[in-house]
Length: 174
Image 1: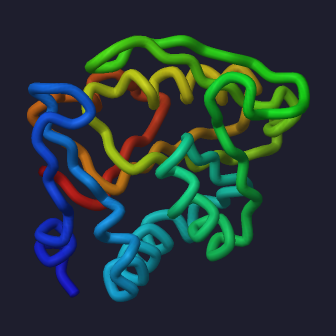
Image 2: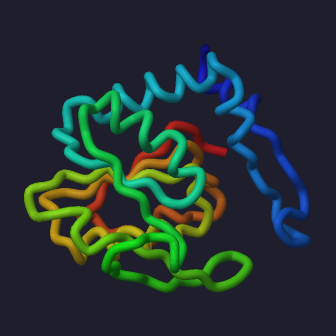
């Protein structure tokens, strides 16, 4: 299966969640077993030699490929969630999105200075969510942070939100 086939499998939904936004629905990749396996294989190959100790997934679509990849990499999985969803003591970060403001949280004891982190989400648009997630993870002082997306929307230049200290890669570009 090619990356072009994966791209063609992504559903486009105009005016979601608000008018003027073209939403790229990657759940169509997840429901197809061949697409899901191909994504898993590609992402595993990207990170298998990086020493990843924990995969951090952002609510909610980061909770799909994140644990799959963590299992394949023999790493733990850590969720980043919206406020009020994590039961222990948390750190939080607020940020602006294309269509509003939001806040995310992580458990304070989820990561330590010995960890090598792969921070994963489904899509890079303007980069606000992942920038906030990076800030949360970096506050916990891991050895290294890698950032991964299934899809990057190149025209929005979200990759410019990240410094040179973070390696950012996407499986697909639109």
